[in-house]
Length: 225
Image (tube, rainbow, N blue to C red):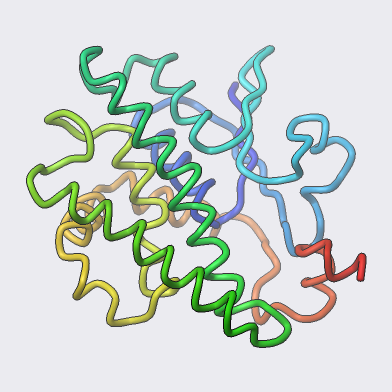
């Protein structure tokens, strides 16, 4: 059975959404990143980058959420747009992988987790996160879904980060992103999305405020300093 290494953060949650939507059997394996499970030698053999998600599917190992979504879609033949839209599929998957995710992640870090205020970094990453979500919002102004005419892995990919918009940008951010909010709400209402979001509740993860000990585990540059 496919093994799925995860926690409740955006990237694993969008893979959980695909697994729930597709009906693929899988074994969820929790990785408590606040405790440093992601740096355990056995996990680093699966993902040398020390991040979730990752999957082991028989003899195949895949890490990085976008690579996993594409692998699972190709494996099952589900949630893919027509072959004529392959270029758009790849383009938007990479847009999320190289733009939305990294800039949103840094925006969260400097807004919520940095040990001291860094105004320049906060301003830069808030601006870029806003800009990237704005690109998605504009693209969705003239279409229901990100690529093609039906729900696909690109929409799942976008939902993984879109559901965090208030945490990333503030409670008023949705007012500027009505088209993205529409897609978010449609996916959020799907039973598979509920199952994906609550998967973490079946396991024990470290919760609560991120203290100094957790920072040193999660953000290695702090420990190195």
